[in-house]
Image 1: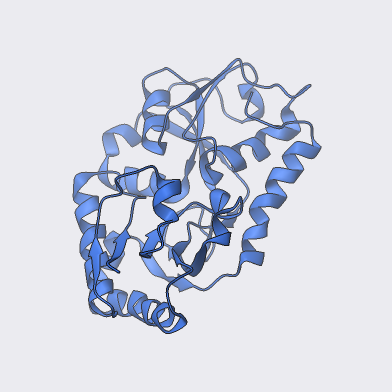
Image 2: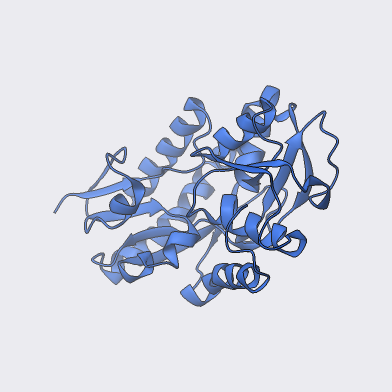
Length: 263
């Protein structure tokens, strides 16, 4: 079996993509068996379920909606970014820099943008934040699915939407690498926190290899601290699926308030 690995998240620029790839290559050099870094050639739900997946990033929402049955948790990164608390993160609620909105409550009747229906940071925590303000399951006048956090930021910046929830790590990278885009938007709040994007492996990967991967993750931070700083990586925590139950809790609280989807 040829093992594969990919890091499909947080590549907000080509330069940052190269940084992540170089870090991943260094991690894999410390682990046997040999593994090939790839670009996912299918939608991520299928890619994450590949039996030869040695290492990848996933979103916590699909993890807790079936993916956990076919993968193992390796670790969860701890990022140095506003809105992160250890291995937990939140999303930044952003509007246009010149918009009149100063709070989420003031956005009633505005237009929302979000990345994907199964995103924890772009949809689930956003829904949870809006739920207390909704009336009969409604709050926004229109909702736009953009396909990515970067797409949501651009929709807000370009005036196609008024508010979006953006993973705080992504937003920190945008501030670092795309300052002109960051200047076009303005944070007006933060969502609740939940466990960050997990690093996963197929359930076919042996336990000894999982432990070797965990060791390699931390070793790569120690040997190149400047790169770790650019990637905003502080370390890794080993969380359980029970920790990720927090994501379902946020979903349940929104549904209990009668707000089942962004609307």
